[in-house]
Every structure is written in C-alpha cells, then in structure tokens.
Amino acid sequence: MGKILKIGHRGAKGHVAENTLASFQKALDLRVDGVELDVHRTSDGEIVVIHDETLDRTTDGKGSVDVLTLSELRRLKVEKEHQIPMLSEVFDLVDRKCFVNVELKGNGTAKPVTKLIERYVTKKDWNYSDFLVSAFDWNALQEVIHLNPEIPIGILALTNLDLAIGFAEYSGAFSIHPYFHLLTAENSKLMQQKGFRVFPWTVNETEDIRKIKLFNINGIITDYPDRI
Image 1 (tube, rainbow, N blue to C red):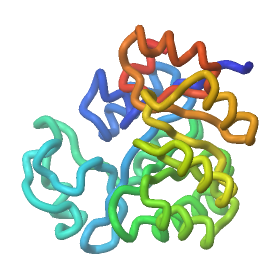
Image 2 (image 1 turned 180 degrees about the horizontal axis):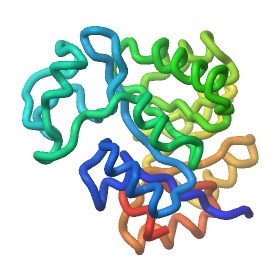
Image 3 (image 1 turned 135 degrees about the vertical axis):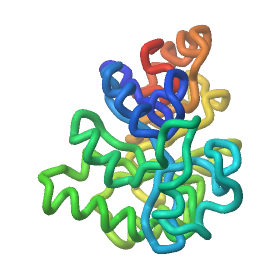
Image 4 (image 1 turned 90 degrees about the vertical axis):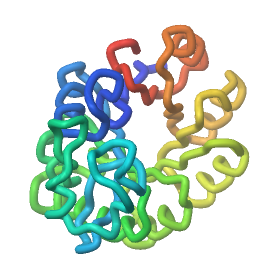
C-alpha cells in the first residue's frame, strides 16, 4: 500500500478560517498532497470558494451567495480579516504544489468549473490529474463528465455507500469520498478492488485517524493535515 495522501479540508480549517487563501496557504505549509474546497456561483456568473449557500455562518454578510455579484461578495469579511476567494485565485496560489479537489455545491457550477479547469490545462500547463471534482449532486457530476470526460470525478457519500459505489462504476469515477463512519476494512478493500481511490472525510480526531489508517485507504480529508 502506498502512502496515505493528506488532503486539507477547506484548506487547513482546523488552523485558519475555512476556504480562505490563508487557509490554503497553511495547508501548503503543512505539505498537503491535496486541498479540498467548495464552490458557489455569484449572480454575475463567477465561481467563488465558500461552503454554505448562505453567507451567515462564515462571513459578516447575510443571505444567499448566488444573489450577490462578485464585487458585492468581495466587500464581505470572513472572520474579520479574509476575503471570499475566487476559485482561480486558489488555483494560482496552489500553483500545482498539490492537487485541488473542487466540490460542486451551488447550482450551475459544473460548467464554469469545467471551463476553468480546461483553461488551466491548456494555457497554464496544469494536468487534469492536478484536479478532482466531487459532489453529492450526481447530476452535476454527470454534467462534468459530459462536458469533459478527462476531468477526474469523486463520488461523495453521506449515508448509502452501495449506491455511491454503483454510481462510481456507472460513471467511471476516479475516487469515492465516504463519510468516514461508513468505512470498514471490507468495504474499503472492495472499493479499491473495483479500481477506486478511497478518500474519507472529515477525519480529525487522532483516534479516528489511527483507525481509518488501518483500512489502508488512499487519502484522508481532514481539518488538521498535520495529524495524518
């Protein structure tokens, strides 16, 4: 079994405000193999990095992300000091130092994210293997596959792992991302035998990390990459 990849959840969420450039920089400083982030679309069609569909939890703003323009969102602050980044800014910061797992959260994100990835591959010498697009919304993933089958796909699973494995087989996915409580040594092995990488989320406690490592999975998505 190869080494277990360290994947920083929303950057290094355990250390710095989630989904901010500072958080992604912290993850890079901790030498992650990948960073995971979430995207929504602004009212003027830009792709921004924020987890919730509303602004209330993580910023000093209120209401839905998708009703504001990019410049309106730029005026808001995350934990008093950070801006909501654009996806392209995170790509530029990461600069191929690790792979980027883009989770499609908002409606209408599949196409612009696909286009942005294509731009980085054709114009900036990135490879498709530098990216991974995941979602709970399998329709959005099918849209990505339809637009560009070269982009690696990750299937997120919260409750039903069998269903996720079925869709992964059907769609030719690269990886399956189960909620870590769903994992056993048996189903981890089964997914790998079927050719999928297994990246559980969000594993933070040392005890849980130790247990999950015993299943020989391929990577761990965590708020604390330094604990892997």
